[in-house]
Amino acid sequence: MKRTVPLITLLLSLASGGAVHAQETTVIQAENVNYAYAQVLRVTPVYQTLTATRMEQHCDQSPRPDGDTKFARVVGAVKDAWRRNQTATTTTGEPNCRSVPVARQFRRPIAYDVDYTYRGSKYRSRLPEDPGNRLRIRVSVVPVVPGVRAP
Figure: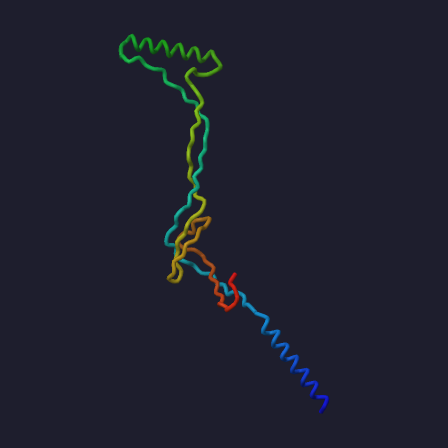
């Protein structure tokens, strides 16, 4: 009988030590994931505004004489003919032309703000593409464990 007492004591100490070790280890269950579809309520594009500048040639129109007389028309026609002849022979271009920077703005969609509903709750997400009428969503359910922070 003396042999069984130390054996029982050894078994009890191992059992209690194993229980203490089990209490220190926390097992976190993997998340339960399902996929479903949500109803899209509204899609609002998010735009990026780009400004492009290019140089354009702007020429001043030759001033016309104020009166509309035959003499004024003849003088204007002679001036225009003389200018055309002068610019055809020179390599510098039109005498009244200059390069002017012209800025144009372009808007392009870079993302979409999507309002959608799933099981009575409304949500909003920014997505790279317009999802259409339905949005595939990932539904994850994880129990709350006291003392463990959620990721």
